[in-house]
Length: 118
Image (cartoon, rainbow, N blue to C red; front, side, top):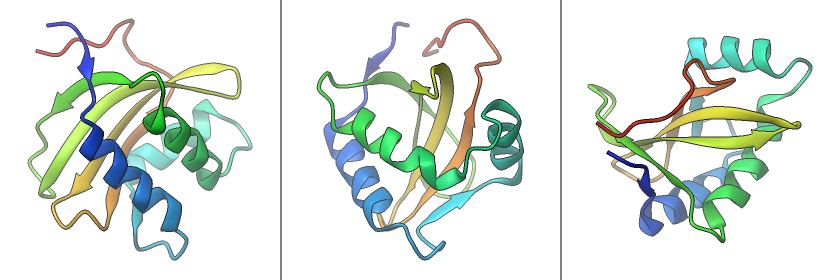
């Protein structure tokens, strides 16, 4: 299945969390995501990625990606590509059901050539 436009409501809610995510409670990185990010983007701090995601999600154009079913935590997840420090990156972000928190599952160089929504 081809990539689909990431819903505006999801993007808006994620951007709101990214905008206020300064206490460390709103934005959670998995250990794997943090390690792969550091390996992919040497000397980059995690918070450098937040404005990149915000710009991507605010568009235009509306970003495309794939919905992903995650067992936990509860919420809605999308995977997508982004550009950071002159490289194409792969991202996977979960918006928690309370819409006040996100979990970053991936933010690294792609491991496969192409996203496929299956």
